[in-house]
Length: 241
Ligand SMILES: C[S@@+](CC[C@H](N)C(=O)[O-])C[C@H]1O[C@@H](n2cnc3c(N)ncnc32)[C@H](O)[C@@H]1O
Image (cartoon, rainbow, N blue to C red; front, side, top):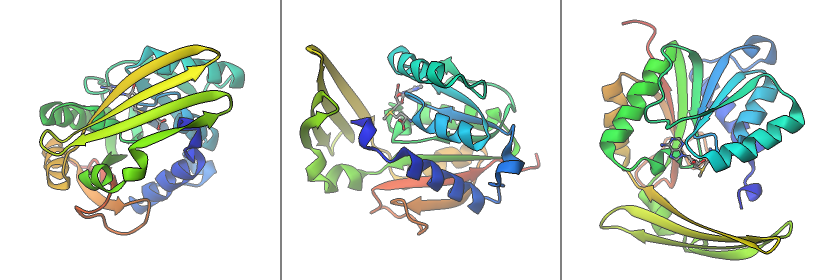
């Protein structure tokens, strides 16, 4: 199902958002810049960003996702991308990165606001002063407005999938049941996403020390609001103490 996502377009959008924060995007200037992708999954975005010239570290807590990512990397023989098996909430590499990204609802997998605050605190520590962090979060509108996503089934390149989503407005938990069948093998997964509101997300990253440059709604360059479905935040670690 992830194959249907336009990762190239998403990576382009991330680079555009970094420009909003005053970061260079010319290939000649970004060569060797250190970028961390938190929750990199199977490295779709990481690979595109490393091709652009960033020296990418991809962090994910799922051994299965990283296994697929490593198979892709083995085919490419790239030394500008390395993968780390770690929980992003507790990953800590003091002032190692110029930029950080975390996309596709990955922060929604963090189950409590305390853990989300801890994540923001560690990303802040991981960045060099002046560093930029771009991440997205799925808001409640995304869970309430998109009934078409609630049941999906189909076939893509020989893989049958069935996906069913349920949202509980009381607990703010969005649960997705996924069943995939490939070569007679069935894989079943349950994904739980925790929906945070705009004000709480802002409160938590501000407490970590970040300054907000922009919060863009729904893949546009317009300001996000509570009715946005997905928000991309562009944050800066100030260059002073
Ligand atoms: C929806 S997938 C997105 C993957 C990737 N960013 C992409 O766009 O293809 C969410 C990812 O978050 C990872 N993840 C969830 N909680 C995590 C955590 N605490 N630390 C690191 N990775 C986590 C999962 O393993 C999964 O790869």
